[in-house]
Figure 1 (tube, rainbow, N blue to C red):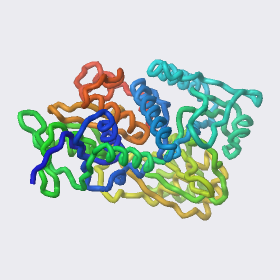
Figure 2 (cartoon, one colour):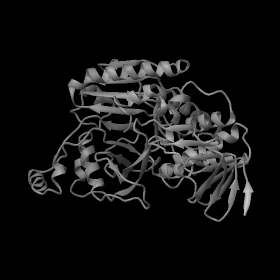
Figure 3 (cartoon, one colour):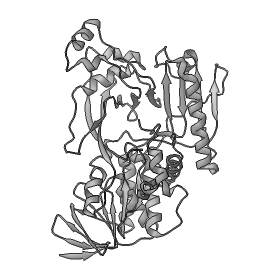
Figure 4 (cartoon, rainbow, N blue to C red):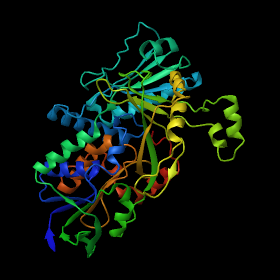
Length: 459
């Protein structure tokens, strides 16, 4: 059986759904969204659901500012049904020697933000040293009328005035302000339902092949036996980006990392329910009793648990009303693996995350002897070497890609979908478009830059 569509989108994760929405909004007709899974279920619903414009990369900053603009517009149009807030990200350190770097890093990021989107008024860095400062805590709900830029609170007494649950060892806290979280599933459903009202169709099937004739997309073969003729094909296959690229004869330079997330019931109320995303910015040793540490160190299979762990453990409250849930994430051991489902989990992860977060939230130690029942899940970060996503045309006429959004798929989805729609609809491309094109790897100067990669911005 053969039928035709103008555009076939392979993958109904948050990027594919966003691409369908913005293509339809741009006036592109006859769009078919194809996925063997229900929309927004493979990895999109494993998200932390956070967003930020706090990036050490000018291209990423520009894209994220645009994406956040679009999310705010969507929130306004929908009555904020996906509960977007702007509580911010709070990076906390107990190392006084890191304060100069924290300030310099913040100023650099804000300079990049100003250059990437001067009309937004990126804001300034405000440093607070005493109770008489002008620091403005974030409101727990909504995203309007919050200060731009960032704040740095110096000194444990000042930090604990606003965040009393943090360790008294904290000496500096950086509060990035254009950041927060939302219900990713509900935002995705707003995009999907609106796209369908605009004429986008969804097909529950797998793309088994792409027909390419004379170096041009001609159609796709589906697992239900159908052949769909189409002049435009979009690879939005998430963790299967590379495999679908091979159907076009195109090598997509990505790999997948397994990332886990755990939810606990914080029955003791240790994490403030109005807290921002809390990030411990220091490496650490996990807290063990002396006999526990000795036993772990004596076994080659567990010795790693007594060795230094990286910075980046983070947590946030989840849910409204009487919810006691907190989420914890910590990428302490990068796992590069091919995607398999169901996702392989690590039973050690909940305890390691809890112990790691106790450096920042010492009252969590009360849970060590009787851990609350964890809810563990995970998904795959599909990423490029430099952690920039891919959006734009592929070297086959009519073929495009949107993907490799690593751990920032939710926050980048609207901006990435908007950018892809500009490519396909032929409207004016934003200044940052080239930063996300696959063609960037053909530039010798860009290849040289890849040899000197710095921060990737990944948490």
